[in-house]
Length: 68
Image (cartoon, rainbow, N blue to C red):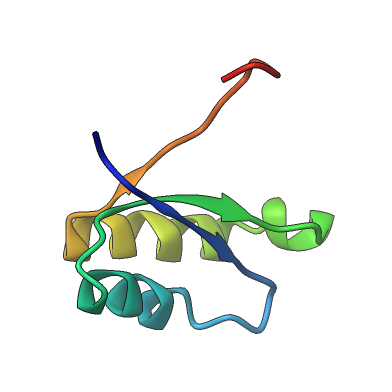
């Protein structure tokens, strides 16, 4: 069973540093949490997230069902 953590981010978050911290803890899976709609729709943030996932080999989990 994989154990993951939640990573909360905003427009001011250094997402690369968050993924680095995740790996330092020995964890490689996470879910992202952001309540700021403009940040969620920001292409630069999406690109930074994708680069960080690839760079650190992290798995991003999502759920589209309420019971997952």
